[in-house]
Every structure is written in structure tokens, then in C-alpha cells.
Image (tube, rainbow, N blue to C red; front, side, top):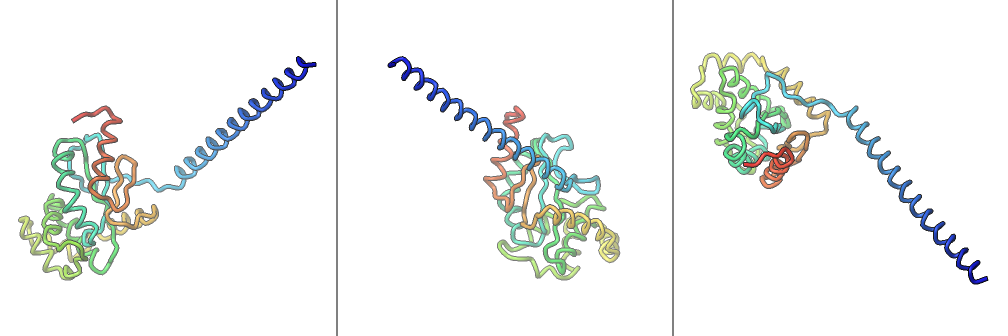
Length: 230
């Protein structure tokens, strides 16, 4: 009789263990299914954000890391990124050939932002996009919108500072020849739901309102994953 009780107890314990294992397996299967579904859905619906040949970049063409900065050049966030993130980004990663940076145009305040972006792309026509942008951002006050840059005369002054051909530059501003391209890129970032300036995309990883330490940590993590030590 005692052996019979032990046998029943053994069978009961095994049944409990098997039930627990089955429950764990079912939970893992559900998790994997959900993860697969979410990834698949995101891949289908997410717009493709690939810089084209018209979008200027800073750094080495074959750099292992690509950083895309989405920003309105006149908003406070862009100025903060320029002052607090870019100095280390340039010296540690861009100048050493580890990171290539694109600026994806964002238009938050069309009344003034289009003027600035138009001027930057007119400077690009003379191969001085980044030099022009640096002068523009350096002239701004931190923590506020550059809404005082509401006349073309300011952008012409910046053009003169980087030795652009002023006649060509002024003609480009007046023509609005880059407006369609800027608007096209701005629409694409809106489709992705990017509304914070500056947002960065680093080898597929988004960081909204990008701060210095977050950007540096993301770059270092990607370099480590690639087995690149510096």
C-alpha cells in the first residue's frame, strides 16, 4: 500500500513538472510569434531613409558608421546639438574616419526655416555646405529660435564670410531651386514620425533629442559590435 502511495505521488509530481514545462514552451512560442509579427510589420510600414547623392555629408565616404541628423537649422535643439555634441563627434569620430554624418533637412517653422535651408543648399552648389552651416550656427544665440534671421541679408553675410560667389548665391536664393528637394525630404521624416530636433539615426538606431552622452555611447557600442577599437 505504501508503494502505491509513493507511485501516485511520483506520477503527480511528474505531471506538475510536465505541465510547467509545457506552459513555459507555450509562453516562449507566444513571445517569439509576437516579436516576429512586430518586426515584420515595422519593416513593411517604415519608410526607407537613405541619403542620396544630393545630400551632403561630413566625413570619410567609407566610414563604418553613418549618422543622419534630422534638424531644423534655426531651432534651439539644432544649436544645442551643434554646441554640445558636434565638437566631440568631429574630433573623435568624423576626423578619424569612423563616422560619416548627413544632415537631413527638417522644416519646423516654414516662415524662416526654409530660408536657412535654401541658403545652405545654395552654399552646397559651391561646395561649402558645411562651412556655411558652421558660420550660421556659430552666429546664433543658444536656447532660442533664430527668428531674427528673417531676411536674406543675413544669409548673404554668411555667404560672404565663407567666400562664396555672391552673385551666384543670390541668384540661387531668388530661384528657390532647392525648395522641392528640401520639402520632399521633410515630408519623408514626417512620415516616420520624427518631430524632435535634433533626432539622430546611427546605423539604424534612433535617438530623439540627441544628447552628447547618448550619441557617444551609441557610437561606441556599434564600434564594439564591429570589433573596431580606437
